[in-house]
Image 1 (tube, one colour):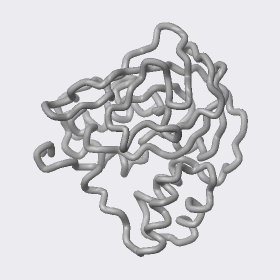
Image 2 (image 1 turned 120 degrees about the vertical axis):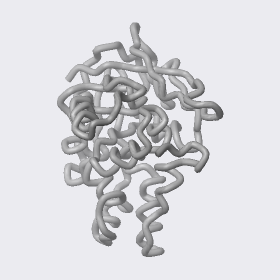
Image 3 (image 1 turned 90 degrees about the horizontal axis):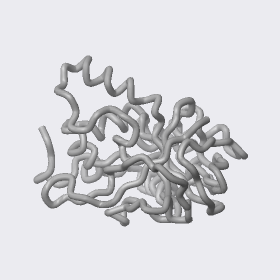
Length: 234
């Protein structure tokens, strides 16, 4: 499967809100290190980036769905067109979605070896990016979130590189199922334990599962999905 590469640097999305969601196609080979692609940035390093969130993959398969969603609801055109890199991804391709990709999957991408670490957790910056007040919530509910990856072996990666599956140690735990367990279903102890006990899942997601198991209450999604009141859209 051919993969497109995208990188970007931090810039102001709206006054007072800086993000590196603006990505552009790579035109030459890039070094892929433990913190991601050469020349790529994460502005908010508390919630983005780091070894377990070095890369973001978003399936190009989803862009026609978003176009249909917008048209069906009679919404105005988005502020950012429905095209690869719109969701701030570093990697994109056709033929692999959350329903097939699994936590712990290991892929060869050029010289680099990468591993799926967690689903993406949509945030309120997507609402500003596209101009729809509930964009992040729709992404979470639909399961079209993409996923994040860690880098197991560093190396050079070229544009239009081939992504090859090397190992799938946890075929029972797809990215979609993982996201649904925390976001889109009632509390299920067996499913939460499945997340907690998976060594390939990022520590943050395992902690969220542990917290729900211990306290019996789902996490408050409002700060992440809606953001501060001053930045909320109708």
